[in-house]
Image 1 (cartoon, rainbow, N blue to C red):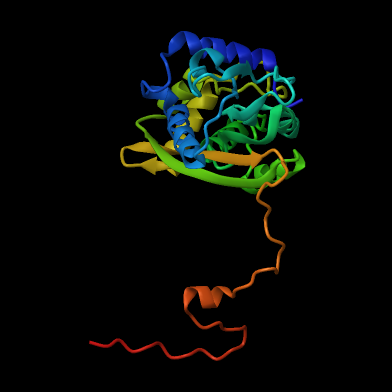
Image 2 (image 1 turned 30 degrees about the vertical axis):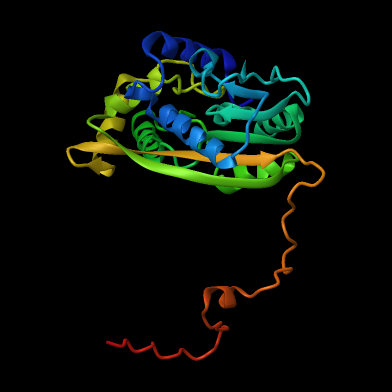
Amino acid sequence: MLTDRAALEAHRVRALGRMGRPGDGGAWFAHSDAVDELHERLKDVNRTFTAPAIVTGFPALFGSLVPGARVVADTDVLALEPGAHDLVVHFMCLHWADDPVGQLVQCRRALRPDGLLLACCFGGESLGELRAAMAQAEIEVAGGLSPRVAPMGEVRDLGALLGRAGLALPVADVDTRTVRYGAFEGLVRDLRETGETNALAARHRAAPPRALFARAADIYREAFPDGDGLRATVQTVWLAGWAPAEGQQKPLRPGSAAMRLADALGTEEMRPGDPARPAAKETE
């Protein structure tokens, strides 16, 4: 088991008590950005969804994310009826799932034929700086390591889950941004106020020594400076796939292209070992 669900829910309840609605700025910036991106992606689909559903760790905050959607919590067993929806959004909670494939399979089963699944979660490059600083600090202060930042999937691995879940036309891409903080404490506060602090089942339950975070702050500031502050990487992975249906567009077989890429680009193909050709002279 990866996640201590009781601890995760406690962190989320505390976050709800501290913050306003996403979109007001502050710690919820990553979720707010994901809301905006979701709306843009739905516009690009150019389809009207009549029976949407959204899976989220904060049903009270994100219930209006997709108008008219059935909103369910990201429990191990999702409260979704088979074949009931033409759109399912799994929003910013897949990185806490003990069984991410199982989550996507349940979403797939809830889709009607040719229904769309959109999922987003934090990706593997998120908080890489924090992982490094905490690991070095813990080795120095405590003489060993303990789980402190949840593992997050790489885009290729997460994209492969779509096929395993039985979804057609799978697409995975990432949005990576660098966030600047004035101090280490600001990053920790944002994680706490969005319910993203340590809820790993294998975490140490004893209170960490006070010197640990002080040393981590020093290491972070020295290793990852940004002007007079420090930087943090936040990566969001987006997954999209369709429930299979008759008449649905199918990807072409590898090698079945009827036109060479060189012809399409209006250039000349070169094979390995071919002598380099002189660059074309510019004309006035």
